[in-house]
Length: 273
Image (cartoon, rainbow, N blue to C red; front, side):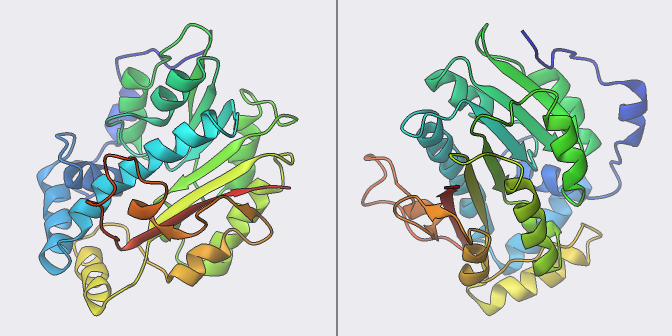
């Protein structure tokens, strides 16, 4: 059994964690109602909330979207390998927990470059089943070749893989570069693999203002895109019903029907044929 089991952050890793610089993973944790953040992260998060308070329910609905997507992929789609790029801090129902609850043999590789995330990954992202595999790759989304090389150590690239970009591509400011990253990774996985991607979308002037206020706090800028641009990441793939939609309306659970509302975030799941 392979897994990430150390519960003590490496000294070199701990030294890289900056409590005086806001980090997106910790800001997202704050929006999710978590406690793994610092005052500087809350300041940056509040700067966005002040202009665009909808970011908080969007963050929480993003996690529900991930849960539904992974449940579909491990269940109906029969996927047993997951490459989750831009992991963020562990929270409720992480990818490996959902996948391994459906298919205990699921293999999950998490990818992030934030030392805070790695410290928590070592402690919390552990197998939930004896036959499962859960591990972590320290790599940057801007370096797909490194991600692919490291993932090869755990995943079998001759079998279908679900590649996940959940709220990460806004860190790649150039849209064509962002599309290139997705294409390069999807080119390495076999037919029958899936792309699951969601990101914030520009639906109001308030979002432009929120992006500006957020960047002024010292946080790494994050670019929301149009729904059409989000759809562009799926070029050449066969979209799973209902196709591209706001994340709250992508296959909502029966208990959610009648209560969910569209959010400033779009996503989809596409199959490589």
